[in-house]
Length: 509
Image (cartoon, rainbow, N blue to C red):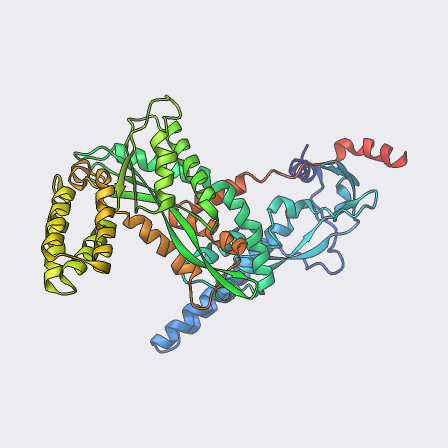
């Protein structure tokens, strides 16, 4: 019998009369009386407002007062409820209990703890059990375990705190100010970090499952949509520089962002999930996480296979992942080869047009006119060939030499060597995105808007903690992931009166 079941049985067999309050404990009032007093206070606020001249200043003051009254009521209701989860008389509970592999002895009185909630701090009086053999193990408080307190914070407040830390533009100071203003919680930096360090790893373990469920739901939505294209599962990854603290200053290294998007039959993006990792050689964590996610989605998806595409620039890590993983991949359930369509980002290709135009014409109208014409050609069948022929003819006409010729050829070879990944006319017909704009924007929303604010420098562990939170927020799976965290917390197995005789015998021995 676990602790909660034991409490229910105890309450069911305990007389309705309860002893007086323990020393130092608050005087017990009935919950209806607590609520009635609060309602009376609200009515008085309403009447006082109605007696004043109507004005914006009075309206603002009235709403703030009502908000404060409601927060105070919520705090009293939560405090009353939590303090009535255990019997008032501790003697009705077992003297000795087992928890995990240890034996614990009940204290003779409840002790208080400050608990932070969405309504502010409350005073929680709970029953404690100390290790019977007086080891260094901490005192056991089953009620605190059952409530799921995180560093003294309720699960609701702990989750909200982590969510605030993940939002764009937030700093520790802004989060603390928000907690103080909205929830009456005056934490310091140390407590804020303790809560974040407890919540973030738990959420990170649920990210994969929540994101896979999200993608499967998006694929179903795409399959049910109307249009002339097959649904598309589009994958991308890119890098962004991040300042990392080191001894004597900071260095800038390349962090990475990954995206997986679903497009419906009209080519509209339905949603995207994000991955993000701090700098590391070879970006191995990103490759592993991305592969794991894609494998799980394809293994669980039962409908017709969507069109699979990989849209990135032509960076080394991006190219290597396609060559060594995606191109060789087989369906994880059927074993059939998977036809991944590789797309080199159209906008990176356009940058090479500008690079060639500058060497041919210099900066000006002629260069811009030629680039605009070539950009249109790129989107036509055989467009890359036509662009290269035009560029080569102009190169010979203007007889480029020296540095201008070298710069021209660098851009020219970029297009020539990747022609098979620039079939933009075909991609448009199939409803495949031409550019990696989602991933490029992901670098900005994941990193720039949160980790690259003025004066920010990061250690990798701290940056990864925020990234783990931020990708959940941006992927739209925060609530699902946190629900999984709370559901995965096992109830504390505290064995009570049923084992009391065995405990007493063990103690006597």
